[in-house]
Structure formats: C-alpha cells, structure tokens
Image (cartoon, rainbow, N blue to C red; front, side):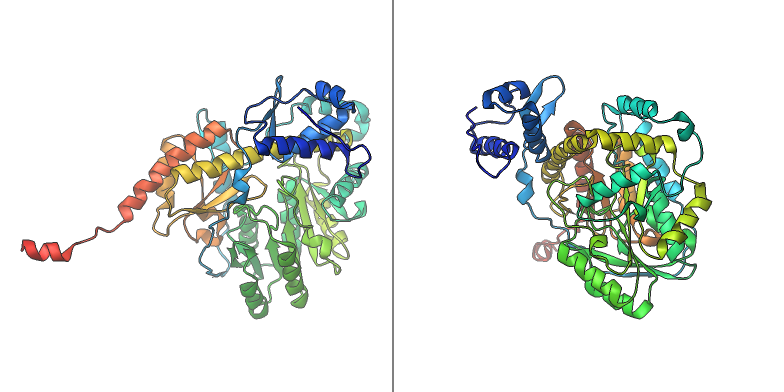
Length: 498
C-alpha cells in the first residue's frame, strides 16, 4: 500500500494516513473485505510510531470506512457509508396535542416488556438500545477498586458527585462545545434521575409543559405523574416546529420546554445550530426554562452542533447527559449541568432523594475516562453503529413498502419509521412478536398514547439480525397495506355485464 507522507505539512500525520487510505478505498484500489496492513507493519513501513497508526485506524473506524475483527486485524468495511447521501422522507402531519392532566402514566408497563424481550433467547429486539459492555471493563473496574481507598468507596459521599469525576466530565463536555465548571455538575443515577429532579423542580401540578411530539416515554411518564398539562408540539424533519412552539408559548405560558436536540429519541433527528439558537431565543422571549436531554450525543457519525446550553447566558437551560448509552447502563451514572440559582435547590432535591450516586460506579467511570479507553471505545461504537445503521437503511429499502417513511440519523441508536394512518400498529407488533421480533410502537412516545402509527427501531444489532427481523416486519406490513387497499370497481364493465 503506497502512502506518501508530507512530513513538513501542518496536517497531522495520522490524518494524512487516514486521507490516503480513504482515497484508496473510494477509488476501488482497496475493496470491501480487503485486509489492511497490521499496525506494526504499517508503522514500520511509514517509519512512524504505532500510536499514530492506531489513531488513523480509529478515525477510519469512526467514519465507518474500516472495521476491526478481533484477532484478525482491520478490514475494509463490507457495508459502506453510501447511505449518507440519502435524504429522509420523514414528514408527519403538524398536529398539536393539548392535554389536560392525565392519569398517572405507567413507565413500568412500557419499559418492562423491553427488558423481558432482551432476556428471551431467539428474540430479535428492535426496541432495546444499549451498547455492548467494553471488553476491558472488568480490568478497568478492578483497577478502579485497587486505586481507591476502600473506606472512601463504602461510606457516604457528596450528593453532587466525586470531585475528580466532575472535573473529568467537565473536560469531556468542553470537547462537545460546552464549557462548564466542575462546580456546575451534579452526578446522578442515570439521566432518568436527572429528568425527575429537574421536572420536579420546575413543574407543579397543573402547570403546562411543552414536549416534542413524539418524545422519550420516560419523560412523559414523569410529567403525567406530576399532574402536568402537556402540550405536544410536532416534529418536522428539522426538529420541533418553532412556529407552533411560539404560538403555544404565547398562549399557554408553559413552565418548561423539554427537548432532545441531538439524536432525538425516538426519531433520531439532530437539530441545526440555527434551530437551537432560535429555540433559545423563543425561550428567552417568553421566559420559559429549557431541559435539554442529550443522552446519545457521544454516538455521532459526524460533528454535531454545540448544545443549546453552550449558548445559554441567562441560566435558562438545564443539560442532561449519561454514560448509560456509551459505557454501561447498569452503572447508572449520569450527570446534570445546572447553573445559577437553580443549582442549590436541585442539589437539595438530589440529597433528599438518595444522598449520592454509587461511589463504586463513579470510581469505575472515572478510571475509564482517565485511562483513555473511553475515547477508543466510543470510536469502536460509532464505527459499529454506522455499519449497522447503513445495513438497516438498505434493509428498509429492500423489505418495507413504499408507503413507509423513515428518518436517517447521523448517530445515536435509533431511527423512526412513519407508517400509513390506517396501519393497526398494536396488531402489527403482536404479529411480529409471534415471529420472535420485538418492535417499539409509536403509542408509547406520544402523550396519552395518541399519535400516528410508527415504530422506533434500534440499529444496535448484528447485520444478520437486522436483515432477518426487517424482512419479517416488512412482510407483515405489506400484508396490512394490501388489506387496507379498497378494490377498484370498473363501472363500465359492470354495466355491460348487467
């Protein structure tokens, strides 16, 4: 493999290697399935440090151009990034949901089937979106426990989180364009606790709250249990409908806007910097706080805009993140960025809720961040997810009817398939489950379970599972569409036969 390096160039060597290998693949000189030189062999050939090759290969992995096979080396990806140029056909009706206080929603009833399906052998589970555990997590955990004073790990800790972990999270957020101080952070038991703390702080029973429609069902359940009145503003392909948002900010004076700006759950959409700026300007104009939930932000295939919180100059935005979607969900480590007068009140609520987040879990996450393993782990996840997403898009094209529309996320774990209005989504779900395929229905993602038929599909599966599962769902879907087609009557032929 001929790679010429410009040693005097301002471009880093690892990026020159990345660009050259990428060119060889795109030109056809390297084909899908071809094995790349080993790290040691390429380092010796180019007379560079092995870490330089590792960095170049990691970037190519994150771009989905190459893939690592355990024990075998690096290979040109068999599923290419050719899907990146496709445009989403997602275009739902712009119907606003305005709902008085509802009965207490059951998050448990929605969540439990997802976990149950995950434990059943032979089930292809499109509803459960979590990463596989890092291969080195046991080693990291042992190291974390050895390095920490066990007396410290097993006693009460600060409610806002361990000082060292808060510093590390602050450094990580700087790379995402969000400059915060460790003193602005609160470590939580996953982002779900952050949602609960923030919503209980900002919202009283009977208050109006704006959410995207659809949105994360865990947030809906918290608001329903609070006795809030929910306004569901529809999503467009660019994000929440800002014109309708302003209309209801003016007419209903809501106490909170809940938004997922990056790899939105369930649609997978990411809003632009302009959209984020405009949303913040509306919130400032109508003095309405924003709760920004970015649980999936680290799983991007390409750079994403800085969070709304990065633009916030008036302490109007509370920001949520988590390691559940990028590291291990069972550790239950999330975080909040809370600034200004809101911080002491939310810390007090956190303290009364559970004293503090597990010291052992915090120590493991801290060690993972300190070791540099987290970045390499994210690179692998992004590369794997990109291949799986592309495989899912290609399978949707092959197996789903033309009436279905779907989003094309640039990261995260999910995409959203919008179906014709007359599709019986619950029946479809049950039929798929009878064939060992689990799908997450749209009803869970709308307030009061209203809304159009759709399904959220995770691409955090093997390519074989994606192919098999979507072929089954596609056949069932086509069957229901055929049933819904009204027969065409040829009245002229009928007249001749009488």
